[in-house]
Structures are given as C-alpha cells and as structure tokens.
Length: 102
Image 1: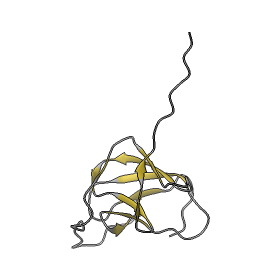
Image 2 (image 1 turned 135 degrees about the vertical axis):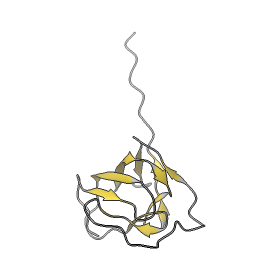
Image 3 (image 1 turned 90 degrees about the horizontal axis):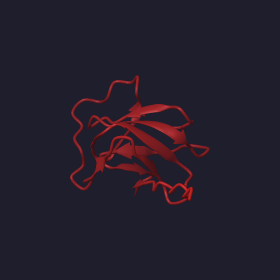
Image 4 (image 1 turned 30 degrees about the horizontal axis):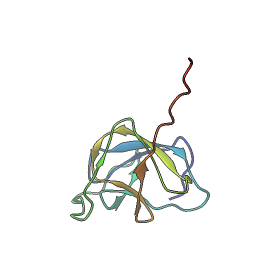
C-alpha cells in the first residue's frame, strides 16, 4: 500500500488503530499482528488471528518508527500485536528531553 501522512489505518486482527505521521515514497507493507493493516474505513477480513510469533502490544499515544526514521505512525487506539514494516518490527520512538530553563 502506498502511504502518505494523515492516513488512518486499522488492524485486521485487533483493536489497534494508527495515523501515519511520516511515510516513505513508494509501496510499504505495514502490518499489525502479522497481517496487513487496512484503511480505517475498510472492513477487516473475517477469520484472521494474530500470528503466534507476533507477540507485542501497540501502546496508546506512542509513536513508532523504523531505524532509518523513514516511517512514523502514532497509535490512536491500543491493541495486541506489534507493528511492522516489511517484516521489521517498529520500535517506540524516544522522546527528546526539553532543555532546562535554569
């Protein structure tokens, strides 16, 4: 699927929903629970289950990105199943500390 900033996605196997903050050019295979995520308006496929090898949880309000920083998503609804792009699990993006105002 070709992503762009602002696209709302939902998992087909859990309650996880996310918004794309930054997306690379071209086709991207973003998954949750081992199955492709779909546009929020689409109906998920029936009968899909979270892959046994995909243990993890998408946390509410956290930003997830890849190592290169090419893609970034914000979780708006938490749920079981880890987020991945092209079979590489996305990691929670660290927050930058604010400078002190001494």
